[in-house]
Length: 619
Image: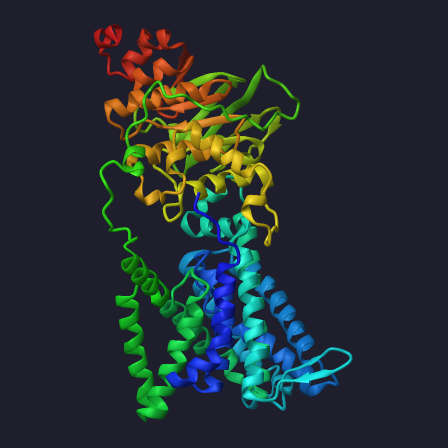
C-alpha cells in the first residue's frame, strides 16, 4: 500500500494561500480578481464533488449560489441582523434545504435527463427571483448595502474592509471548505461516490443505497454554492441578480472543466484562468463584446489539448520530469510482470471468514426456495413457472442453451429485476420484489458474466467498495471518517485478495489488469460482501483452456464451506465442480440431477445436446 503522507495536501495549500497575495499581483492579478477566484473556487469545490467525483452534471448550481447569497444579503440589509458570518451560514443552510428538496425530484432521473432537469430548475429560480420575489431580492437591481465581512469575538469586532484583509477572510473559508472536501473524498462516502461515478449499477448490487449517497452529495454541493454566494455579496457590497442566471452555472461547469474535474483544486485553477483571461481580454486588449468569443475559443482549445484540465497537465508534467509516468519502461523481472502471470492451480488459498449468518443460525435445510417464478417482457416469456430449491452448503450448477433464461433467472434471484409472478424465499424470508441492494445486505450476491468493475480505481479500492457494504451497511453518513479506521475493512479486503490471488496487485489500477485477473476480481467483489449464497454467472467466460483449469481449481477452493450456484457453458468444468445440476430449456426447468445423471439423461441429450448420445456418453 502506498505510503501515506497525512496533511501534505493541506500544508501545501496553506503555503500557497499565504504566498498568493505576494506573488499573484506580479502576474497581473488585481486584489479583487484574487478574491473572486477564491469565491469561485469555493463554489467549484462543491460542484467538483458532484460532477468530478460522482458523475452528476448539474447546470443548476446558480439556483443555490443565488439563493444562499440572497438570503444572507436580505438578513444583512433588510433586517437588524449584523453578524455577517452567521448570515452566510444561515444562507448556506437555506441553500442546503433547497438542494434537498430539488434533489428529491432531480435525482429520480440520470444522465442527460438529470442535467436537463437542473437546467430547468436554474431557469425557474431566475424567473422567481426577478418576478414573484422581487420585493425581497430587489429584482434586476439586486440588494445593495451588504456590509463588509466582520468577525465578532465578543471582546472585539474585527472588520475586513480592505481588499487584502478580505483576502484573509476569504482564504480562510476557502481553506476550511477544501479541508472539509478532502475529508469527504477520503471517507467511505467519498469512495462510494467514485463507485457511483464509474458503475452505479454495480455499486448498488454490492449493497449500497446509491440514491441516498447521490442526494447527500447534491445537498453538499448546494451548500458550498450557497456559502460562496453569501461571500460574493460581502465582497461586492451588494448581492447581484446575475447570480441566478444560467450563465453562472455555465461558468462553474467551464471553470471546473478547464482546471480538471475530480481534483478539488481544478475549479480554483480554472477560475484563475477564466477570470484572468476575462480581465485581460477586456481591460488590456480592449476587445469589447468580442472577448466572450475569444474566451470561448480558448476554452475549446484547453479542453481539447488538456483533457484532464490544468491539474491533469501539471500532474503529467510532474510524472514526465520524475520519470514515473505510466509510459516509463519496467525491467522484465519486476514484480508487476510476475503478478500478471497465471495463478498455479495448486496455489495456497487463505481462508476468509464468512461474517454473515442466517437469522435463525441454520446451517442445513433450504437456503433459497423459488416457487412458480415467471418473467414476461411483453409477449416474450423469459422464465415460466420455475420451482427451484438449494440447500445450505450445496454447490449447484445451472446449464442450458443460449436463450434458455439462465441470466434472467439469476437477475430475479438477486432482485435485479422483479418477477412477473412467483415467490423467492431466502433463509426463510420472502424477498420477492426486494431491491438488489437489500438482497445483497441479506447475503445474496452474484458475480457477472461480463465484468462489472470500477475501471478507474485500484484493485484495493474495488474490494473496499464491496466490503463496505458488509462492514457498514446500506447507508451511513460517515463523511469525515477515514477509510483505514473502518473496523474490519482492511482485513476483509486483504483476505479476499488472497482468496482470489490478487494480493500483489492490490494497488494496481483495474484498467491495467489482464483479463484473467479481472475475472478473478469480478468474483472477488462478490466474495468481499461475505455472501451466504454466492451466484457465479459464467465465471469461465472468455478464458483459455489453461485459465479455465486454474479458475476451476480456484472455484473449488472458494466453494469450501460456502453455498454456490454456478452458470456456465463449459459443462466439463461445471460437472467437475458442482454436486447437482439444474437444466433450463426455453425458460423452464427441464430436469435436475447429479452430473452423472445429467450426462446420461435422454431429455438433456435431445434438448440441450442435440441428440448426440455417443459424445455425451464418452464425456
